[in-house]
Image (cartoon, rainbow over all chains, first blue to last red; front, side):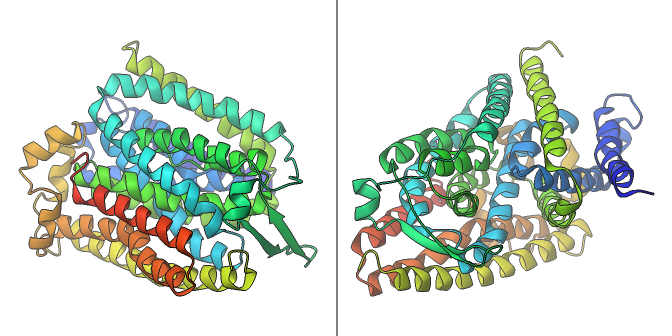
Length: 314
Length: 136
């Protein structure tokens, strides 16, 4: 079988089949009451594995796919889905962090000033999210997902400006660096500009990440790259470092409030981590733009479904 | 001092190594504790087969119905598999503040006061979040 149909078949099996079974909770293929707990755990693991493959191929974080899709397909309360989503985003960022740091791609000096404000905003977001009625959170989540999709489309078309002069604050904090480009094997130096604007933006990004438990790579990377002018590789790696700090802050709020169930969080973390590794291996054999548009389509549907569910239409 | 690329590299590599060992320990604990819970090797506060009774409820209601001790109660219930599994997730959530104690010492060693202050403030924020004093 040629590679592309084979990939599509695998994608169909790991995404559509569990989704169809899970969405038939109320009297469908397998009614919720008849499915043993371990059946749900296996379905969740298989679905998140599929999400991990797709997220990795599309170049988006797993957290942003996890919350809208799992909340749409599984009988779990949104509190537990957001708690698990934060754990998924946090564990993904933590597992990639050491490699990025040792390859000098992630910058602690760039991450720290943004994380200090981002983590406070993330805690506030988590507290607000757990205090609001679920239908309000669903409508807001749907709106945020549709906004994120539009943001992703716009960011994909954006061209990174190359900063000519570092701003005073980033100069004073010594935010600059150098990494080795693997293709050219040359050292690439970088610095940033507009740090105060970046710090201000992280108030909003941190708040949304904590509120919805969706991680924040979708916003971190374009902000670091397009607004602050950091190279794309440095932006991706540093974004992970920021998620590992801000996700920790919001994660504690969800843990302490009892909004993390190991039975949901652990299979999700395992599935997403294995899936992203498989996705990374398949990266050279697929067309990332096709996958990216597929993800945009899935997110639009999940966002619309979340708004309709929160409004009581479905 | 602030623009010393060598200092930057040393800091990031050292922090990366500490993070690597903490994350590795965290993942081993995560899967080991989940195995003990899911396969019923140790008794649980709420057995896995009963969790579907509460997973469709808001977190507050589920917590009340379970009658589980407050979050930090797992520390005194180390024989309960579900709380151990929760503890392993808490360990992963504690990786960053734990690694930050090492990072703080590194920044202080290099007399980098602004970054030492930022790490210290971040640690305070994370400890406050974990304490349950905010949003708990």
